[in-house]
Image 1 (cartoon, rainbow, N blue to C red):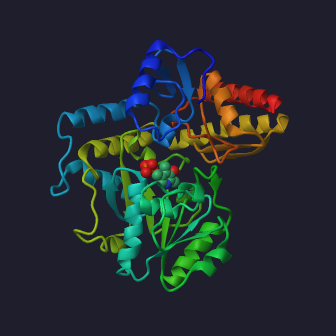
Image 2 (cartoon, helix red, strand yellow):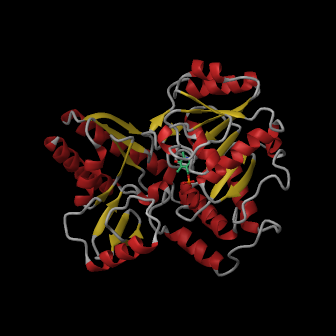
Image 3 (cartoon, rainbow, N blue to C red):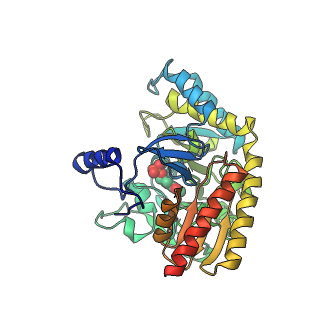
Length: 405
Ligand SMILES: *Cc1c(COP(=O)(O)O)cnc(C)c1O
């Protein structure tokens, strides 16, 4: 278990004791109990302040407790919390319209998480051919969630350990390898599922020509091209959706994480034509598109536009890039720096977990993925001085750990 450099306080220890007794131990947790957050700052139960460059594991795209979202949720929660999808509600329709207008103009199916959004996409692929073209090609290094369909779509064996038998019909190609994709496709293949920018895979944008190639293959073979934008979507990269950086339009996108700025919500977007295959009775989510999530989702989109945050992200990403490339120049531990808006990977030659710990010692919250990639998913509202503050602390942490390894 990781530690911080001061002894864990009594309040935090009491919470940890309750967890140890009553909460399923399926997560590795730091011994820190967070109680409050504003923007990119959070505080623990002892009142210690942290700079959070990984707010909400990518869910808190507008920082902690963004005011317009808080206000919208407060108003909605006192008006109508939840009604089932047997009725119409204003917020769900409005939310779907706003998403369509910022993507490819189709329709939305709402759910509550990323894995559910991907399950909806998997079902859509199968339903389109009445199950005849049930196979999906996905990619090594991708991540699609933890329910049985999505976890089978996730190629890494470590996510499958002890869970078999997995769902039938998934085939894995090396990321970026169009020839391998062509070889895997047969008459039973119905679609290709890919993240335009790998998230858990280490913040890796699709190589040049790759998504275009997948689009061409899908067009030639009549397959659905599904983009998992659960991590890279909703404005994080400085455009509404990751695919908009590549000039390739998918048939389906899946969204969650930041979709409702920290409130649980997920969505699958597809074209009006394809949406017809999800006939009444074929798929559902009881809480999907509930008024609370919809109010948060609408408020998030409006806030991004009202505050000009897509442009802000581009500027702030430039500052990150400058700082991190400068650091790379004087620190050979840094192998690569990848900045896609507020989706940032710093690939190291050393263990990332030790750097995350050294950052925590400096009251900076970051993440490590793929063992050696420090991942930042900062809030779009991050200020320039917070970028400098964060990069100062991160640089110290990397230099310290590198000196010891
Ligand atoms: C996090 C993530 C998921 C799973 O989302 P959940 O909400 O945890 O189910 C799926 N795809 C990608 C790309 C993700 O980053």
